Length: 272
Image (tube, rainbow, N blue to C red; front, top):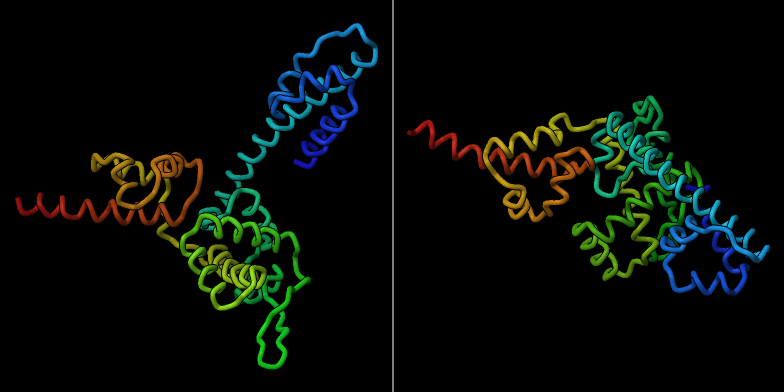
């Protein structure tokens, strides 16, 4: 990813200093369109522009190669994280990169952390008291594993944007006079507790995508019918059933609902 960013910056910097005729031909295009155009650059009679075109062409090819490589690596990271801890990668806001970082922080022996407070300390997610007088405040803990802390920060950002429960919590704490960073520190502490439980005491009844698919098809239900009942989107459920994403909350809710639908049908068969 860093190599891709570096190549992108080189491409843009070279484009800024390129001849005006070349800049004007690419100025109105989006970055992806600029890359596509650059990959098709041919020879040019003017020596300076010919060399600039060649450099842009090579950089665009490198960016395309790095994009493909990144996509393959991310898929593999997701597969390994799902094998190591399906409960962790199924948490709201946890993607392949975040899960990989938290698994690396916990190590092979997560049980060595005797409590969730110890894990929070390891991730620097335990704010340090900084109260004065009648004012109760906490300041940032700058110790611990900063990469793990950044992973928790990413989870909190995702939940603040997409998780209704987290958004309600932020609204309530804001009304109490808490600042944004203070609220995020509280949320990181909560997320650290949730991650610790997923690592050390994962639920044993976590359904797989294949199980959900089989259960839904056995009852003749469409993805739309299930999603209407759960307030989810068919695309999300489809990706969960195919194993493309892991969503612990949605998977458990879907299985519970599907089993509830199967119970009345079974009762009718028995009575009949």
